[in-house]
Length: 76
Image (cartoon, rainbow, N blue to C red; front, top):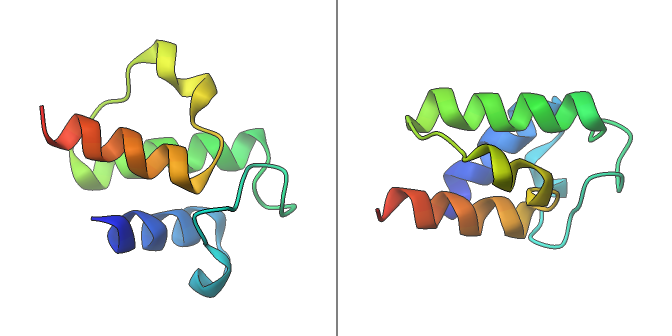
């Protein structure tokens, strides 16, 4: 699941997947601004068929946090 989420993030931001590491956070690259974050969230929701709770959206600001939340929601 981790590699799939990283690929989705790279596509949503239109960047090379090689730069998508666990440590990457919003603001680390110009493409990951507030609009980029919305693109990531909506693309993950569409492609993986999950829905992020609204109260969690502001915490999803790093690759690591997104992967953790996807794993939690996928195991429910």
